[in-house]
Image (cartoon, rainbow, N blue to C red; front, top):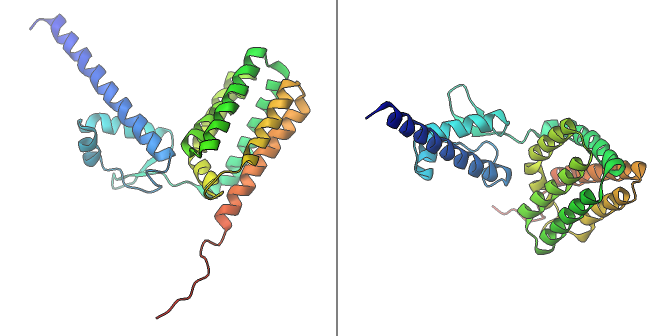
Length: 239
């Protein structure tokens, strides 16, 4: 076998391994963010290799990538777990999200074009459609796209990057947030988005920032209320 053929086979093998790792990464990330894989669940390389029908190398590569994003943790004994939610840091997370959404929404109101406004409205319609049918995963995805459409209109790549990371980090908590409403998420959850869109359309920077702040604080209050609620209903304990 000549050198050219060997190099071609080697390149093809690297590409296959890379595509396999990408597939594992995407599926595990989706399951973690949707809470199908729960915080502290064990991620066994051997079991994952069998599940995905591939060697342990692409699985290990995917786990390393997820670890860099803070979604999995590796213990001293080399076991890999889904990362805890880190609820003790929720207030810090909320503070960061509040500041970033306030500034991006203010800038969007100032700088948005008609194309930006059209994109923001389209993402909000997607959210409303997902809420109407009760699809929580689609609500979370469309909510992220809605806020990123606003962020894109702000014309600042550094804020855009930070905003995307914060929204991504918050997906698991958003599942708990929507769960806090019980069987159906009320139509009132769309109200904040509507107010934000209206302020951006009117290019009212102060009002856009104010609505963005109220939106984050409202989500935080609902989420913390859910976590602090007494979960047991009244019942008699007999022995």
